[in-house]
Structure formats: structure tokens, C-alpha cells
Length: 427
Image (cartoon, rainbow, N blue to C red; front, side, top):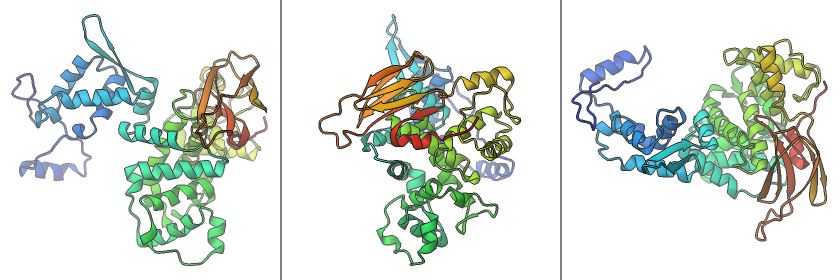
């Protein structure tokens, strides 16, 4: 498709990606005069962030050159103002940082959170609003409350979940699931008809799907292609969308950009939802993470279930084995496997005292302590240390709910009620 640019060229090229089944229909439409409009402008912060992360744009001037050469700009966005707004938004959201050069040029650099956001391919605006929502949540008192708070927040904040559509049969089942907070055993004992839809809030049926994955994972460990009579494929979009954002939250534990409780719970839930057909329960996330890292991307769907089942048959529930011999199905060469072992929190010891925690953690790990919403972070040098909990904010309803967690790049270990996500295992 020919198009112009802001630099005076009379022709340019735009590309429409379609598979073989869609190609004839699009060719017919274009021949008939159908106008294809670029959607880059609809999510400009995402595209600008991706350009910066991939190193194609390093300054605001280069970003302007990129923007003015896009098909979207040619179609009527004849100003760089939308680009400047996108850059400002990304900076305020903590995804980009900018700095003035000696000649007044404004340089752009992705933050660690920005690189994480681009890598997980989550929408920058939705991700920022979700993180803000997590920050407003009270610190939970137990794992059940934590998973209920997080999953409900997802279904309110993410449009694909808030606006999810269901068949009448699925709606009936999910209303019953909602009434029993995702617990199938209670569902089977209660045959009462659910209330009508009038009382449902936006996203509540998607919330029921996530509760089911969190509290009744065995419902997904079926070969029939149905979950409580609902076609499993019809739930895939909801679960996959939730899984990406939960994984994004979980990966922030080491960065300290969300509260530690949210990172631990989200990371565990993300792995459990991703591998839901295995029926993994609470705390399975660490072992699933390890299995995933021991497989190559191409072999992951086949090897992870095999390694998971082999570990569980041996009574292993966590990646804390002491040996350095890779499991039989590990696809990593010896050097990479040994490097992976160093990414674990294995060997961490957290002993809670009144007002402090005795910590032994691997060198380089991040140690987080909290009292309600107030958190502190330390870098471990590998030696034991006694660390004090911070003072809670005077107006914090969660004051007094103290905890501690240790994060490495991918793994975690926590004390208190969050220890439910550590799992246990035999080496």
C-alpha cells in the first residue's frame, strides 16, 4: 500500500499481515476501495516503548523521525504531539526515563520495569493502572484473601476480562461458581439455582473463572475438553490474559515496584494458570517455574508436564534439591543448568521475631520486609543478618501485618502466611 511521509516523499509502503485464509478476502476489499487504517495511534505508548526497548529509538528526536514515518502519521496524525504525550505518559508511569544531552537533545531509556512490560507484551496503560490498583489494596491476612483480591482486581481493570461474553449455559454454571468462591466441592453439594444476572457486576463471571483456577485447579485437569460442562477453549482467552498480567506482577518482586505479597501471590498464580491442565495447587509455582526454565521454548509444552509429573511422583514439590545433576528431561546444557541453580532462593532461611527477621539469603538476592503498606528492601551479601520491620503508616488499616520475602531473578521464598507459596520437596 503506497503512502507518504512528513519528509516530502510521494510514496511509501505499509504492510497488512494476514494468513493464507484471510488473504483473498483482504485483496478483494482493497480492490473494492476499502480503506485500511493504522491502529498504532490507538496504543502509541506500547509501540514507542517497544522501539526504545529494541534500541531502534534512543532520543525524542529519533522517536519523532520514527513517528512521522509511520502509516498512522500519514493518515492524518500530522503532529508530533501524540508522540510527546506518549513519551510523557511512559515516563510518569516509570517505564521510560529521559535525560538531557549536552546539546539539549532529550535521550530516552527504558527502565527495568519498562523492559519487563515490553517483554511480557502487556498493554502499558492497563499495566500501569493495574499496578496502581494493587497499590491501593490492603495487605491481606491470608492466601485465600490475597488470591480473591488479586483476581477480582484483574477482572475490573482489564477490558478483555471485564467485557468477557459467555453462553447462557456457562453463565448459569459460573454464577454458581461465584456463589461458592470457586470451590467445586461446595458446588457439587449445592444444587440451588443461582440468582439472575441482574445483580452481577462487570467482570464477575470472568472473576468466577479465575476463582475456579485458583481454588479448584483439579477442574481443569480433564481430557474431555470441558470444565464443569463449559468448553475449555471458551475460557482460554480469559485465563491467558490474566496469566500474562499476573506473570508481569510476579516478575516485579526483585524490582520492588509492587508490594512483595502481590509479587509472590501473582507469580504463583501465573504459573498455576499457565499449567492449569496439570491441576497444580497453591505453592506449585516455584517448581513449575523451574521446570519451565529447564525446557527450551520449542520443547516446553512437552517437557514441562513430564518433569512436573516426575518430580511429584518422587515427592518433590519445590526446586530446592541439593544435587547438580540435571533431571532426565532437562534440555539445558550443563553450564546453563548450573547457572539456573544459582537463580533459586534455595538455602534461604527466614526466622520472624517480634519486630525483626533473622535472614540468611543467597548473595545478590533482594530481601523485602513490610509492615502494612510500608516496605523496605535490602541486598543480601550472603551472610546472616537481623533486619527490622519498618514502621507502619499511622492511617494504614493493614498496619501490624508484617512479613518478609526473598527474591531472586525468577524465584521467591517468604515467611508468615506467604510461606504457603514456598512449597516443600525432598532432594
